[in-house]
Length: 420
View 1: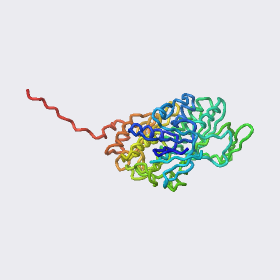
View 2: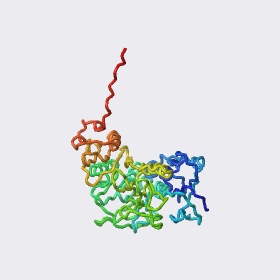
View 3: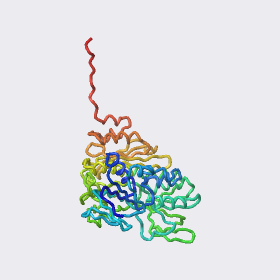
View 4: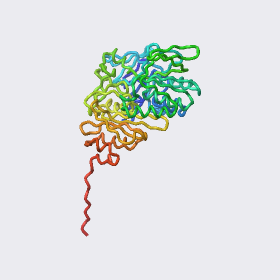
């Protein structure tokens, strides 16, 4: 097909869906085409390793916009269709069916894909990035089976929790001495290992799997120390890779470190009339003075809403702080903010009691917090991140100190009585 100009959104996640909704909310009545290589309408991805995998959610429970919204709002959706090339000079995209679309502005929201390992392939090997992946793994999680997981990151740990609740034996291999150290710190890593152990999950930190062999009965994993571990199914959860190939092939700048498509604070790429948002975007953040690429649902959704305003010429920089959450068993892990490499870490609460927060302080200012079952710390920090404040490590660590006292105080208005 060949279409007239308008806005073309590439990607089937919440970033594209939020951009489409934002454009209509802002009053734009021109053509919007959303192109996705998946067969499902845009949906949220966190439930793939949580509620959808557990069976609590059906397909209709985590769509980014209601099913009828696209038709009601005159948004064309091309499912099962891939953009095979971008022509910035001609303001045109080429489609996998041989057709093309011209655009006034193009939004690349192509997301990321699961990182794979050479030699780890086969019918019993899984990753989770799409609905079909979660459906396929969920069908294999029968009570009594043995699931091995490579990587104790968030997806690995979330799947481990769901599988254990279904009566599956779970072994998680993590090369690092303590899981989640890079993302959250040692306190969280050691605590999560203990929590999983309480539910029968064996997290083998410091152990690396070097090879696998698929047998008639299942899979044999070989570890670096020479052990052979048998399992029925294997999940590879070792991170992700940005889907930036379209940008590379079109000559659009890509970050050499994180692999994301480089944008300014408005989401604009190095090519005129081309934006990038969501997990694939390495975006200049005005608060940090540097580019950051965030792979979180909340940021992708907010990127989409922000992109709608910038597509319409409002020039609104994206300054929101990264936020994410992970539910494992009856525990809620949440974090907000972005800590630099020189940040001082301060613990508030009880690590032993599994109710604590780890704050990041830089130059006397709180820049991030990660919390375990402490929603108040998170809510207060979200407010602090948006305003000037000064804090000491002693204040943050002291639970008797009310963190709300760090917020700027509004001047009191003295009431005077009117003369009688």
